[in-house]
Length: 238
Image (cartoon, rainbow, N blue to C red; front, side, top):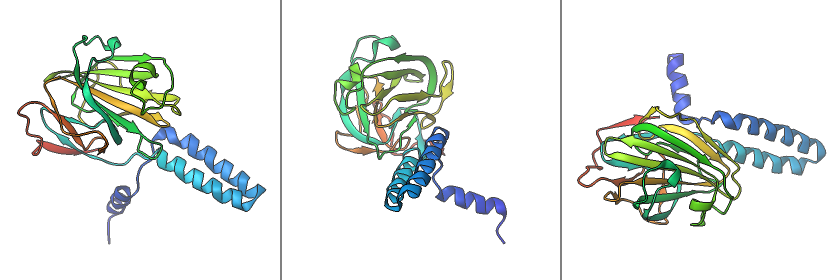
């Protein structure tokens, strides 16, 4: 007979965990569903569909993250909407020289958990209020509300930016300055619909292109010159 721990581990590997921030919204959705069923059954079934979407939005699936020097992972699930060179956000005090920038658009159907693109130490976190343009709009990078995080890695400085979208009204970041992170580590989320960007040294080469889909914490999206990204040192499930 299987040990209870083995059965729990098997169940855990199949079920997708829910981020704690989603529990209150799922609870509200359930109350709404009950009320809609009391009013009119067809409305109740529409409410069920909505409740399922709410639960899916806050899903927090396990990921297997490549670990190696000189590679960067996607900080979020979604569509690559920009691969270019641009100066990093001024509030991070990283200078005005253009860096490699890769931007990801998170639709309402994507996993919204944000993950560290590289291993390093958090040296600065800067939140800035702003507008709520469509996250696909290139102007969203400069004009929208955002939370910018600077990371000091072995290769130098990098940055990951959480950017609110038209629907998003809440940016959550669980990091603190001075904290050490590993590549692929969860650090926050944005609800609902958003944009995530990373900035890397200009000499790094992108390994993705616009319109490509990325998986947060798993897709290797850029590499340093000479880096071997096909054979990472190890993998970490998180």
